[in-house]
Image 1: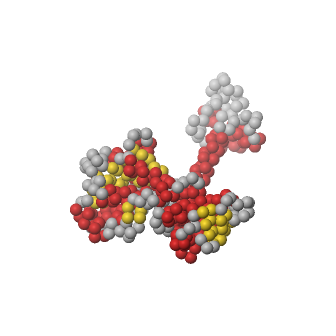
Image 2 (image 1 turned 90 degrees about the vertical axis):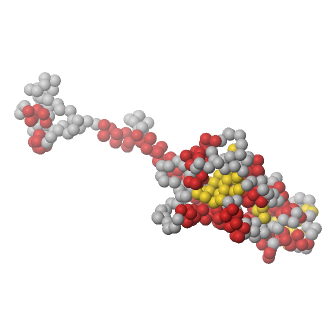
Image 3 (image 1 turned 60 degrees about the vertical axis):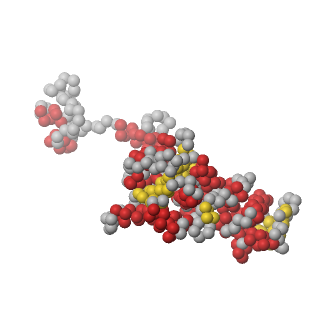
Length: 414
């Protein structure tokens, strides 16, 4: 592949490719890959005989050329480029123009039962995979759809096939997602099976059904709720705890202390989707605060940019994050407003209306004279709780006899 010298502003950038078959693979079915790049970067790409002409904004034009060159480099290594890979490539290179897709996409982890190669699709996923290879306890924290559990299971299955571990254990807490399912029929295994279905789905995507069933029957692969982990010592095991945000701090401590010799643990969760009852702390949040800084424990974070599901999933997560941020900003503004109102004083700099209102509230009540019509009705009314009872001259020499009070009217009849 060759590229012409940098064109002048407004002139299209020309890219030439050597291999005819790889060039057509780069274009995609009905030029789908080219259309994806055009929509994502706002450029126009003209097609020729093994030639592409890119026009548009100079910055986006250079980025489009960089994406096409990196994708063609993957094809030269016989990597099959899918439409989703084009979207991932645009996202990766938009954040880091110096990133090399070959170091990310060619890091093959496992080949699934459907003959698809499991590889990382973002820089964060690549760092996550490297952390699992190097450290014994790894936390993967991020929104849904970022591949936390799927990549961990691919690493576990690959290690199990290499006989690096004796067994693989998949576990998660049995917590409903915001609704009570009631009393479930069947024995204990049938009751907890619905909570473990997502783990079975990912397992059957990597290992064919019959082989997975035999491995489960032999105990090579174990899928169990977190409550069954207490009292066990897990040696030579690859353990995955999914949905860790729904654990309590006690459950998280119990799980982490099950790890035995030659074992590895991966804990995944999303702290924005906690289904615990109100007031119960999340064990995942507590572990992040408590265990950070310990050698051998790695924390990997993901964002909505690492989502590898449908394009709309990334937009939905971003919309919810913006709504939550706006909610907390409004709450902080309301709290600041209440503090300012409570702390308002009669300072000369205070607004005139507020100062007048506070003066009216702070002014003492004017008592009616004994000859007023209100005095007769007030005389028969009992005193308010905590009210001060002034006296006339017959009851106390301190008060003038002209001062009316309920006490003087009732007791002295002055």
